[in-house]
Length: 173
Image 1 (tube, rainbow, N blue to C red):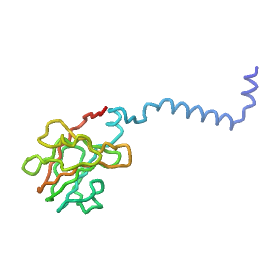
Image 2 (image 1 turned 180 degrees about the horizontal axis):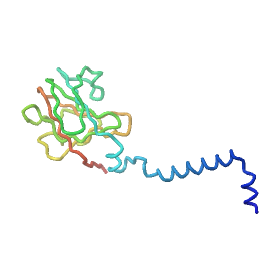
Image 3 (image 1 turned 180 degrees about the vertical axis):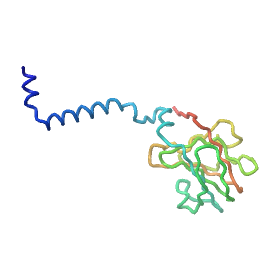
Image 4 (image 1 turned 60 degrees about the horizontal axis):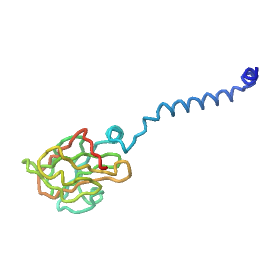
């Protein structure tokens, strides 16, 4: 009896408000698993980009997190293993905020491995040194924040090839 009284005296505005609340609750419950969890490697791969940029400069020197502001020339970007043309003394491989790259190795135009000089916001940068072997540096460990990450390579070359490990997991406990 009381339920009929309540339903009978509900105004259309109240009914619309209740339906809206029910929809919001339903959507928030069903989408709860869609939020990225930066403590989960699968979420890192699904919710963050893999784009990296390559910059070059002769002579080298400058800010490893802002190559454009330090006089470096933009050579291009990639998502996987790729070659970049340009004769420079120093190269920066940069991952912008929201992106990261697993760099395995860097070689010059004739396939000679190039070594990392220094890095910014990068784990295991020494893994880049040598030939491609599946060991990699995680460029931009600050992927979910407002910081880029980079590795800097000092070597005179006419081009470089950046070797990327695709779909790898890196987890530093």
